[in-house]
Structures are given as C-alpha cells and as structure tokens.
Length: 474
Image 1: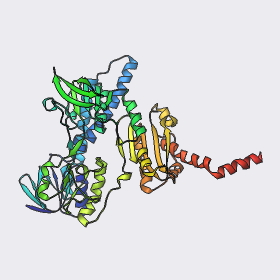
Image 2: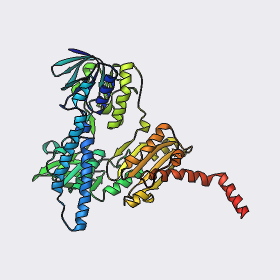
Image 3: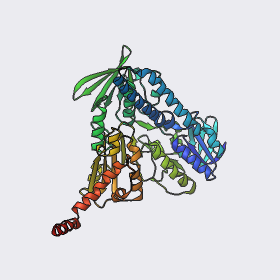
C-alpha cells in the first residue's frame, strides 16, 4: 500500500500532462496506465498512425497520377506495405519520447495495469493498493459499435485494428462519415482501394459550417462513394466478402466489399474503473464534472474523452494543464472552448474555430458580418495548383471575430493566426494590418480580412466626401 498526493489514471496525452506538471511542482505522483506503453489512443491507434497513413497515401496518390502520365504502372499493394512500416516507425519514435523512463526521472511512479476504485480514496492496480489524496481520471475513449443485425457474426475493423492490416483491401465499406471515417476512407482510396462511405445522419459533418461541409463533400465524392442518410439494417459475410444491407428513402440497397470499417463514434473508457465504489456520478456514459473538472467527489477530477467536452487530444491537453492547479492548489481553472480550434485532416483540410455562420446568426441575429475569399485568388495556391477551397471569417459588426473556417491545402497551419487573434481579443482589422510574406499560404487570411477594410472604406461618409472633393478639383 502506497500513499500519493495525486494519482493520475490514464497515460495518454492528458494524463501525461497532469503527471508531469504535478511532479515538477513537487507533488508525490502516481501514473497508472492499463497498456504496457504510455501514449494513449492518440499515439497507438489514433492521431499519430492516422496522420502517418494520410501522408503516405498522399504520396501514393501523387505517384499514381505520375504513373498514368508516364504510361507505367503503380503497385499500390507494395506502397501499402511501406506505408504501414512508416506508421509503425512514427509510433515507435514518439513512444520513445513518451516512455516510462522519462516520467520516472522526474519522480513519477508509473504503474502498468487495469485500475479500479475500491473506495473514494483507494485504487487497486493489479495486486497493488494505492491510496490517493487527489485523483485525475483521463482514461480516454474506445470505439462504439451500434447494434446492427449480423455484425457480431462478421469480421470488421475499427481505428484500433485497421493499422494492423497486412494487406491493402481491394474494396472497403466505411460505416460512419465523421472525422475518423473520412480520414481513413480517403487514405485507403489514395492507396488504391475502392471505398464506399455510409452515414446514417441526414446532415454531412453537422458541426462544421454548412458552406465548408458542402464543399468538402463535393471534393470527396470525386474519389469515393459517399452516401448520406443511409440506414444500415444488416451485415452479412457472403463468400468471404462483406455485404451491408441498407435502407435509403424506403428502398433496400445492398453494398459489398472485401473489408468493413466501423467508424461510428467513441465512448468513454471508464467501465473497468468501478466509479460506483468511489461514488462518482456518471450520466449517459460520461463522467459528470463542474466547469473546473471536479466530479461529484470534490477530490476526484476527470478530463479528456471521459467527459462531454470537445473530443480532441489538444483539448484534453489544455484540460490537463488547467486541472493540475485545480487538484493541487484548489483553484478553479477552466478551458475556453469557444476559441479552441480543430482540424479534419482530409485533403483538402478543414479548419474550424468558434461559431459557424448558422450558430452566429441564431445567437446574434443581424449583428454579424461574414467575409469570404477563395484560395483561387491567392497567388501561392495558384502557383502550386492547389486552388480548391476558401476561407470564411465571421464577426460581429464591431469587428470582433466569433468564428473562422477554412477548407484547403494545409488549412490547419496557415489559419492558426486567427486563433491567436481570437484569444487576444483582436478584431479582424488587426489581421488585415499584419504583414504577410509573399507568396505564402497565409495570404489567404490577408485576402479575407482585407475585405473588412474595403467594406468600411466604401461605406464610410468620409469616402463620399473625398469623392466630392476630387470631383470639384478636376
């Protein structure tokens, strides 16, 4: 039995942030992880392997196009093997950075094993009993699979198993058109698979700005079958292939492929924790927390995918930074989610921060203005023949930025300046007055923010006076 001032349950991005922060402040800390390596889902089955696969598939797509021009052949299967090796290497390198040794050097005791509460202050890990003054739960999430007839009788992939596939499937059905489903679907298309994506919701990417979602959908449909508003009724294995029986507008439609990937969302990974023994309140599978991440037990905190906030690694990391001071010093720090961006790593990429135009109009009515610019108007994108996409910035009429969205090549990189401006409280005019190096992709931001000054200039009474003056001087 060992006593700790803070016990962190879950060795993913959020848990590692909390453990390292608390240990560096001098607290006696234990970090508990059920898997044999730290890093969490993001490193092993999420962000890192998916982005490595996206990069490899983009290269494959370029090679396929070049092969067609040169009248030669491209072996997608061989490239898939190289892509898988790159995924494994990326995980290994980052795993080394986030290894157990790093935490032990700063004084964190690392425990590998499944954790379960025995009481509000007692946690069992394997055969060891740990006593904690404070706890932070950051155990992440797991794929959720809806109850579909026949699904339990057929082999299927999730984001936790797809990166272990040894061969490239000739055809693939993806159920779920969220971020995970779309990123993986496009990657397999570019590696050479024929892909069909089925989505039950009638709206495509409902959390994105409508203009962005519509544009991205049109781009993706050029390379894959993307079916929205499809009810999946049954899944069967027929002669070694997967058959998915659906209902579309009252009619039965069947789809077949070699493999099936389920990308139908994620749920908190908290079942094994026995939170009932700690008297921690849970609602609809998520841990209930206050704005400062305190659970129904004030000494137990929860962050990341275990709570119902934004399900992103960087959001969990920010919550981790906030909760260190809350747990150790009794503070009430919280994250401002209204200025927290996210990216969908398709090609073209989608960037999102703040309100969509629809959300802004519902909240502020006519007290908003929108500014849009096409990437086909930006010299760098023209030069690189990457004109697909646009930028939209939404402001109040006083110039305060309340939302910004973009779809385009590497949009998540060159739109970060807008996040900085929103966090500082800068108005759109300040972004226009910045100096942007020419020719850079960030000039897309300049292009859209310049529209603010043009509108102000042409609608200004001073402009009309100037026109009259120059007319008189002619």
